[in-house]
Image: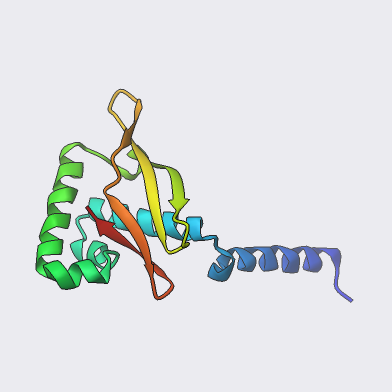
Length: 136
């Protein structure tokens, strides 16, 4: 049979793999992950990555170039305030009654260390099983 060490390794690996399975992810966790992708790509001045997280209906309505320009302006504003990943915090994710919309409440840390709740940048909508940001 297997030694205790081998069983412990197998158990540890199975627990790690269970954490990788996105089907076990709650809708709130999925929205959190997409919000983080959106904000981190915006901070990194990667408009292309940020635009991929924008609601396709918004891109159709405004055009990808216009959305990219808006993202660049938003990112410039964050960088001018010297906001980093460590200065961003999700306070709550609230799903709509239909389970296909969500609002993320978040805060930013000021330079004196205080957390200030921010007006949500937009809402979130699920399209074909993927969450997208709908900027306001």
